[in-house]
Image (tube, rainbow, N blue to C red; front, side):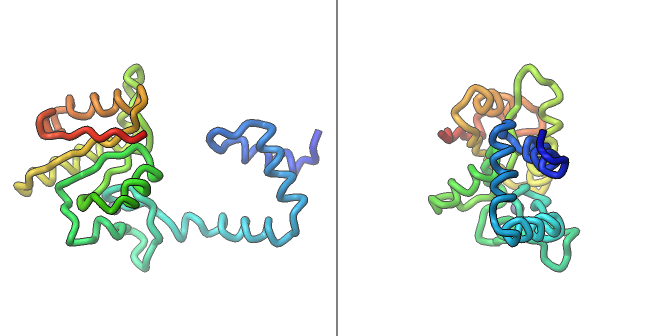
Length: 183
Ligand SMILES: [Zn+2]
């Protein structure tokens, strides 16, 4: 058995997505084997992480908090040159980063934070799906022509998500959407 403090650290690493007991122990012993300042630097960042960074209230991209932490809006959503009625729906932030790198999209994004498992009826509420419907609805109320680009991954769940969203009455109908495959 490891010392209690190490065991506790392993327990925390185990909660990370995709990390098993062996990897968790490797991380813990890496920190223990490194100089003290490595663990201290990590602790310092973690201590203020939530104070420094939040998620954009519109698209859910992570963003550095400014002086007004309550009204967090990311750079893209503030950018007047971007078309805010063209919404690219992606599963996670890494997909948004990859698409942004291509510099070929001048609309805005919506990070779902996962995919919709068709057998799990509670899945949409766990993701940023209701917020997407709200966004679409309020743009339509403003009289804007909304275009949704469903850019979920080319996986079974990604496809299920892209099929589910247009069936919702609060969304655009199928003809108004485009599907973009991310692999
Ligand atoms: Zn945003």
